[in-house]
Structure formats: structure tokens, C-alpha cells
Length: 210
Image 1 (spheres, one colour):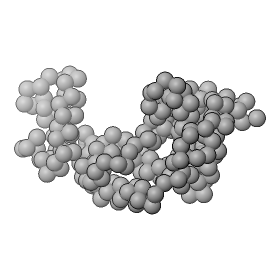
Image 2 (image 1 turned 135 degrees about the horizontal axis):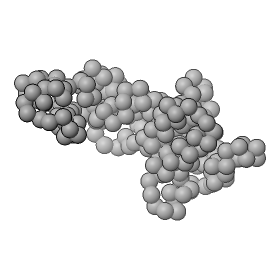
Image 3 (image 1 turned 30 degrees about the horizontal axis):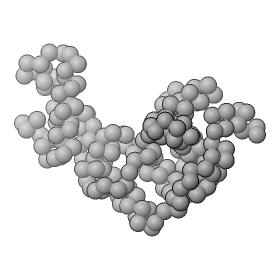
Image 4 (image 1 turned 60 degrees about the vertical axis):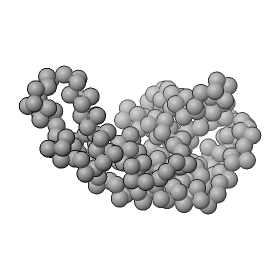
């Protein structure tokens, strides 16, 4: 069709069967259902683009055994670059596609939420939840899975005020230089280690402790 002529990356998805009770629709129909859900929820353009592109990596990943999200992110990046989408939007959509396959199976608690915020940034973390919500609506899943996603969203909201970014730390590079560090990439590595400690235990985020 016209769409696959304009976006040939969609062609492998047309009629592609996932042989999954969880995802019974052919891949192209699933993608369009998620896009429709994103539009109905009035989600922003980046999330709608991610909705269209998020599973394009599945046919290739099914052949190679790779995870489909990074494969799809690479496809999305090439596609959006060719269609001349602005760089910032392209990178954001690629990040959504790369991160969309996160699992809700493990423990959902404050630590999970802080690490999720740290990994994706605040805006993208909430957009990933919004995308997952419309993705689940286009699948055959239990009410419990929707409830766990709602729980994650509440945890993200409550943990936004906890330290989860380098600038949130009670020390910075100049503090490290004061105690003898050179100005070098090592500063960034040390700050990353300190952030990791603070993600585990936010109460440790004091200048003295760090």
C-alpha cells in the first residue's frame, strides 16, 4: 500500500503473525491499534510515533534471537532520519522505542521507580508508562498487569522528589576537586557511583556522607 511505499520499514510487519495469545493481532494491526489508542488518549506526537514504530524490530529479532526493542530503536532511528524529523524528536522517539519493553514482573517499589527515573529521565519515564498503557490495551492481558502499571505510575510520581539525577547529588565535581581529584572523566565516574548509592538509599544524599 501507499503507507509501506512511504515507510518501507513497515512492510515486514504487514500480516506478520506473532503466534501469541497475548498479542493475537497481526503485527501491523497491533501497531495501528496502539497508535489509535495513543490518539484517543491525546498523547503527544513523540508517543504516537513510538506507538507506530515500537515493534518494528520483532520480525528481525525473531530471526536473530536478539531483543526486539534495540533492533526496533535502530530501525526507528534510520526511518526518522530519512524522513527528516528534527534531531531532538528523533532521539526522544528512539529512546521510547528502546525502553518500551520494560517488565512489570519484578518488585515494584521506590527503588525500582528511582532507577527507572534515573535511566530514562522524568519526561520519558512517564511517556513510557503512557505508551505501555495503550500498548496493553491493544493486547490480551490480565487486569493485574494494568494495576501494576498504575502502581508504577504512582511510584514514579512519589519518587520524583527523591534524588535520581547527578545534579540532585549533594556534591558536585568542584567538591571532588577540592579533596584532590583531577579534572578528568574520573569525576563523572565517581559521581555516577555516588548516584548509584543514593538511588539505593536517598537518605545518604548529604555532603558529609557522600
